[in-house]
Length: 496
Image (cartoon, rainbow, N blue to C red; front, top):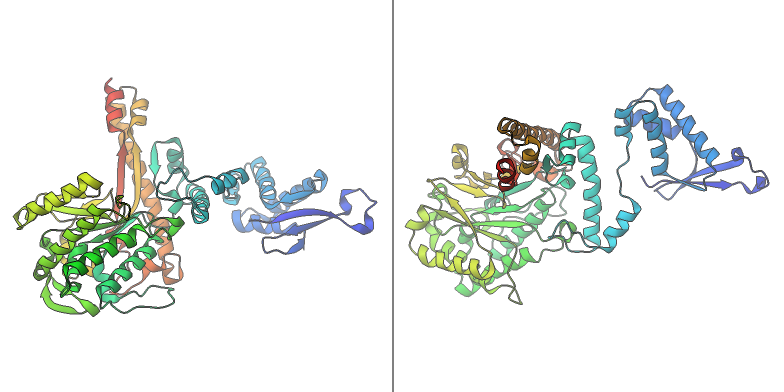
């Protein structure tokens, strides 16, 4: 990719000006200096585009002739590739040109990225690691639109008909929901890790495992890392601790996640913690896992007072803010409000407590689980109802692992503009937009399946690890998000 070709004049024939007497050398990205070899163009064309050998030979000759006759003092690999691509265009080989195209970033853009902060993502602080992330995202976005998605879907994104979220993270799912029970039961045993840890025996160690696993998961998902029923699953580790010690653990959890600005691109880990004042119906009667990964002999219903104390003290920490009193942005606390919530003693005081925090700091997220439903929230965009199989999994809660594979948004104001006030046209175009989103999901799913098929040797090895009889990522249970933007503007423009 970074090859530079230089023209050096042979000192023994310095008096001769003919271009045929110029020796062509190639400075490779491996810091070698090798002589020009036209065969490399032929090999690349055959390997990358599958054009016939005669065409590859002819193109290589034309490019070589141009370079020798141009008297250019230095030729870069991107220029050679562009020259080859222009020859493919001349021959009408558009598909081959796309397959042979080079992904990269202009020199000016790189200079701007290094000097100026990223304005697209408020969670990315400015620094060398952020620059690496932005550069990698730029190349992967190009790759996704050229190689993963069809021209029809890619063009729809480029036009603004739909928006494909997180194209820079095309090689991973969108967001995910985890269970603390997984690391409580199996410890921290990740593929390619230098060491493994047995199930935690102390709450501080469990917290450390949670933070490290979240950092590892962030490298395999594009969006939020959600944790289910955190105060409930921590409760068996809190027996015998004083209120002061439990609050210290709450402080550690919030500070550890809010200060993890050393992970991907220098970001803090985008983390959600699902919290309950009551025992959720699907966890009633479920045997509790305690220190060391073994069952405690109790059910989670027995740990309700400790779970309530932990969630109360978590919100005390949120209320106090950081060292200078500022709000914590991560982990985001998602409090589930169910019918059972209002039947649980102390709910009014707790509701006043978390609403005060919401008013002072803006931290609290409220998840309304209406109609006797049970939900899990994985990020600010995804909250889904637990079905019959999920409720069965709740008896072995380490199996409750979910993901949204991708997020696609339909641009509603654009549809209204195109419909020109015609109801039939509007709803037809809306259907087309949703169908386009579905098409994009199917294409992303096929790509992720290809990566997952490589198993623990592949790039998504963490998601293929099998500790309980199934891969960590349960793709058959994945959610596919279709969102919308501008409904109000659609109505205004369409109706006048």
